[in-house]
Image (cartoon, rainbow, N blue to C red; front, side, top):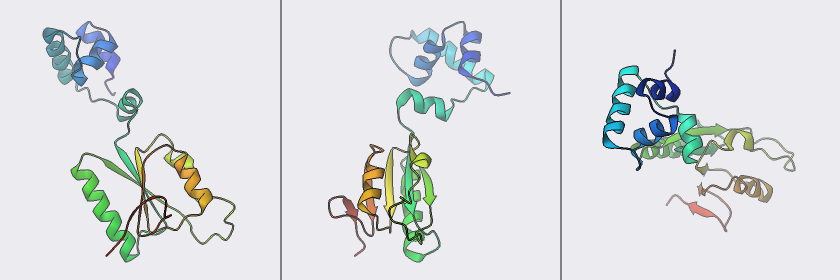
Length: 160
């Protein structure tokens, strides 16, 4: 059974808010209380839930990598480099690939539900997007960078 923040609070004799503040190093927690909470958390084997931490901070620590293909040379190299760079900086990568052969451009190819509240930024790799698709992904409210190709009014990285 997984140990939750409520279990740590109960065992340490404090509120869940105090546990949260103590473990995140926030102010307004006495040093003795902070030490007791950390000791109890370690003894119980508590590990914070990434989704709960995301709710509290409003950040996911994840960058979405949008690409139509993962096996083509350009795409795989950019994805590999981006993933390594993100990991080195403490971020995660969420790979999202999809069918680009669909002829119906009126129906967006990007599924926003896969991205919504799951990413802090997007890297669009080697994909020409319609104005509607750019507008839709922009509605996520996260920074977007295009690698290889992209609209002139967006941040783009090109291969030289």
